[in-house]
Length: 294
Image (spheres, rainbow, N blue to C red):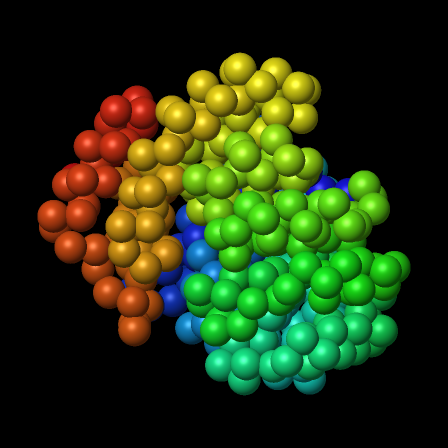
């Protein structure tokens, strides 16, 4: 259902508020650069520090600006099942093509708890759901057997797998139908995961180098593995650079350096250090990315 380079979109702020103009411009930038789909209000979109009103508004703006040109997969997860249902209902009402639903964080549910959480959301709202497993952020790892169970529910259509384990990703791919989309959640592992059968990536790097990421994914999907491998190594330093500090600090700094938004991030995340900013600039310049703001 979903494949290719799917950007985990940053959320631009101006004087502490949502910068609607910059958000709309980012959507246009991604469509022009060949991004295959957009995820607003994921981890990279600072969903944890958006109010419900802001969260809903970001999704509405992105859907409106995209205007059905590419799919929008709205971030709609929560560590409260009730809240996740509310956000999922809003995404459907707003016209999202699907939702991205993260494993509940902090609660540390059991595997049965994870199954019941996603099953309950899927039963309440009839919209395609992409599960999101990122144990490094949530404190819980959704095991392959749980994903396989959930894949049998008709509107659960895929998983963003960001455990960092190729074995885990491979087990999911091996034991789910081809109609179930396994999507990389780790930029540096996208090429090997796609070589194993993943359909694409929900990408932080795509905020900074959308065209190259889209080209790499397309090359794998077209079975042009030599070209894909070349692009993988071209992007590898940037894949590491966007995690010099907690995501999305480096990604937002990079997008600011490109002149696409203001240099603002919300507490408790803080400004990138000068030392890491210089390292990030060097990586960007080596990729031929034009730096507008210093």
